[in-house]
Length: 247
Image (cartoon, rainbow, N blue to C red; front, side, top):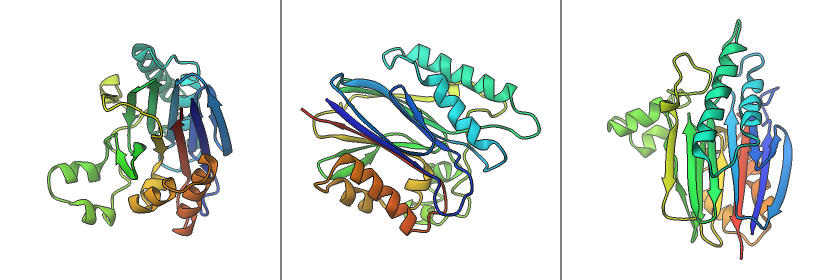
């Protein structure tokens, strides 16, 4: 059985919400959605409209609606839908560019396949530890790879929000999408966490591990993660999706 919950929150500073989430066939751009399924499969995603410009919230919602009916077992179809979504963003961009990050995961029983563009992330929580499964497309990640920054200096880097890939950008191709098959499996009592940078830029890994370790409902865990981001100032839109596998 899969249990899942998503929370999309505007935060405490922004007037609009550029984030959106998809849980199986349901897209949300504000509030809480939860569900469960006896079928251990589905496509889940988060997206974050880039730039906080006029109508930027439309980009994240549009991409997820394009993915809403995709079969998680058909990677080629998912990539086709992502490409079509990108073309739609480009076609409908006029004075301002509509662009968005995307992090999606297809759950196929024990197998996971992730699709990532930008700096929204997928994590897996197992045995008390949270592990990042995707790799950011960002300036700070490039500097980490080159050894110019380390994990500590990267936290306070002034340009940490600059991403190097997104949907809706000029020259986009499906080669920009990092598709990863995670062979370490999704086992009972694991929790997958998808989130935007409004969560991972402000809430420490140790804080997330503490929340995910508590003996409370999945919904309460998601709400506490959002509250933790608020406690840090709520400077960005905040989205978290939790997916738990139970016997």
